[in-house]
Length: 170
Image (cartoon, rainbow, N blue to C red; front, side, top):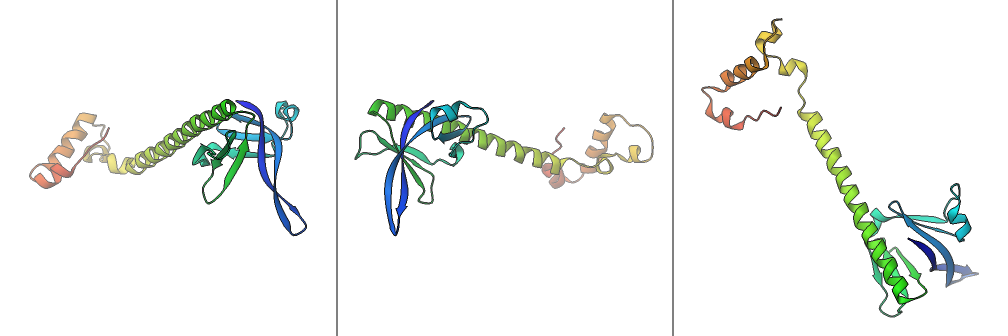
């Protein structure tokens, strides 16, 4: 989704800080909300945005109840981006699109974190060749995988507690 929105920004004049509305061209894609000074710059592949908001950092996008065409993007830690659309339907479309993209970004981030965790667990559980060798393999003979399993079963026989605690993942 892309289009013109007004963004509320603080502007200093001497010692005074005033809020001003700046018209910016926003582009929502690839897990980011970027804004540019104009539509032409947004269309150039080598153009840097004025700012980019990672949607994985967005807590929520909500309608401003006092103003029909305004909405707020909450980034947490009292950081909010106040935006104004041209109409209520346009505002609603932006809020819905941002919320949907945010959920996708969160999901992708969780999947990535889960994959890292799974990979770390696999790596931590992956025994070295010294640990997985059966006594016959350590002696230099080539034993079948089945004989390695029998060796483990023989070690566990006679010790019911250890047998219950053992878990072999192949």
